Length: 333
Ligand code: CP
View (cartoon, rainbow, N blue to C red):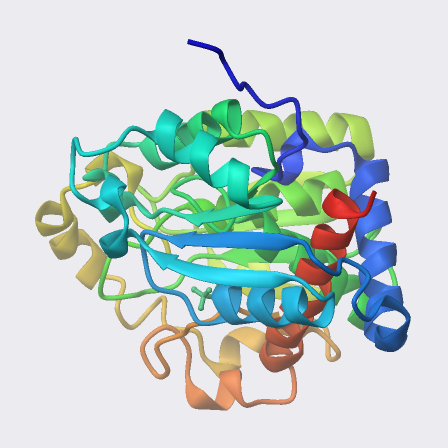
């Protein structure tokens, strides 16, 4: 059997890419936001297979519209309509090789519940696709990373704050009724440290992020400047922040065991619901970010999500430009 192991460049984590390349993506996204017409049909005749094990609003639609504006064919595939969805019916290898014969890129979303909460299994499957497909694999969010979101977040911070260096970002846990993936906090932590920000990670005890990710963040600080600190105290962490990035995530100690985690999680329901008073600890012109979807008045109050600090809709809009920039960068001959 011949191997079709890919030599193509995939986008699975921002950590896999040099900062200079990420800078190129961001610069391209800025130009695409300003000069959309310039890129119209620039990828005419190309195609992307969008493969979803889990639901999505922003990732699916921003990529679909980005592809359309570039002249591409985007197709939506639910796992339920694929043989992979019937366990044991088809291997990742065969699926990846075959899809790569039809398409120029493959985007995949795979959350922890799609891999029975076996930690990092989603990311392993993502990399397995990348190993066999002869076209780029784009991570639409797995159980470890959400690189398109992180790229958009840096884009949005640069847009609102002009630069990242010297700016303080709080990556803040918040209450949510369910344990959510760690992909977004991991990704914004890695991206913001790569962009030299002063990062203050705040969460209750027992919600520590993976040591491996923390070590990568500290390595980024060594290489790119800035700082990273961890705290369990919201007031201290939010103090003087330029950016407040709120996201809930599940405790790794109880990973895949939501029942056991629930009692601990419930104790944080009120104290870790983000309110105006929390934003008051920050700079006057600080921005409130959330990747959405957000459970209003559970994760954060309406007055925060709709308030003067909030940039959540601009952040969501920017998903379009970064998706477009990535497709163009990966697929333009
Ligand atoms: N932020 C984000 O990835 O949104 P969706 O889950 O709607 O794609």
